[in-house]
Image 1: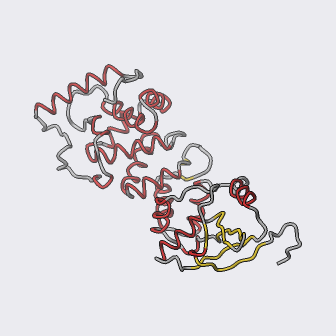
Image 2 (image 1 turned 90 degrees about the vertical axis):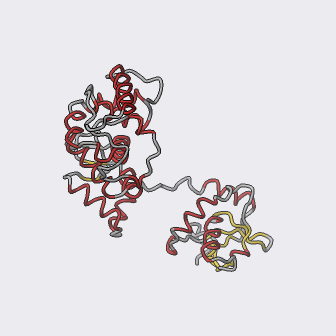
Image 3 (image 1 turned 180 degrees about the horizontal axis):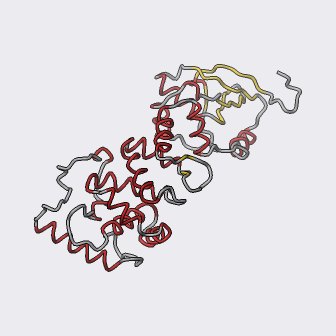
Length: 312
C-alpha cells in the first residue's frame, strides 16, 4: 500500500481475536442487546465489515465496530473468534473520538425504494412476490407519487412480512377497486388502515360495500376526516369504518368500531364465518343490539368532521 499518498489511509489489516479488543470508550454509544440479538438471528457472513482499531500503547481500542465484534462473538459462541481489523497506529484518543463522531457525516443512506430495487436484482423472494402482486393490479412501485404508483415501499413490505400475503392482497384490492389508483390512495396511513380493517373484521368487511360507500367520498375529504379524528393510520381506520357504516340501522356487515382497539393478533386474520365476534343479520342478543344503537348515535352525531373526545 502506498502510505505516502495523501488519499490512502495509513492502515493495515490483521485478524485479531475478539477477546484481544478493547471497547466501550467514553465517546462510544452503549451496546444494544436488542440489535445484537436481531443481527445474530439474521446473521450473514457477507455483511460483516472490518472493525476499526486504534493501536495505542500496545492496546487494541475499537473505535468503530464494537457491535460487529459482539455479534460475531455471540454467533460463534466464543470470544476467541477472530475478526478482520483495520489497524490505525497513529491516532490519539481525541482523534478516535472525532472520527467516531463524524463517521456518518458524508454517508448517504439508502432509501427504502433503492433497497427494494436491490432486493429485486438479488431475486429475493419477498420483494419479487410484492412486486408481482402490485403489478397484478396494474399498479407499479416507484420513487415519485403519481396515479397508479405506490411509493410506500416500507409499508408494503411490513404488511407482507408481518401480516402475510393474503392481507396485503386484499388491502391492495380494496384500495384499487375503491379509488382506481388515484394519487394518495396508496399512502402509508391508508394502506395500514385498510390492512387494520382486514385483520380486524375479516369477512364481515364486505368488499362491494366498501367500494360503494367509501368510494363515494372524495379522497381529500376522507383524509381530512381521518386527520381530525386522530394522528396516523388509526385516524384513517376510524374514518373508513364510520364512512363504511354510514347511517344504516341493520346488522349485516356492520363494523363495530370498538374492535379496532381490541387485541387482535396478526395471526387471527381468517376468512371464517364462524368467528364468534362476527355479527350477522341473525344476531338477536340484547347486548349486541345495545352496543349497535349506542355506537350508531355516537357516529351519526360526528359526521362528517367533528373531533371526538374519546376513541369510541
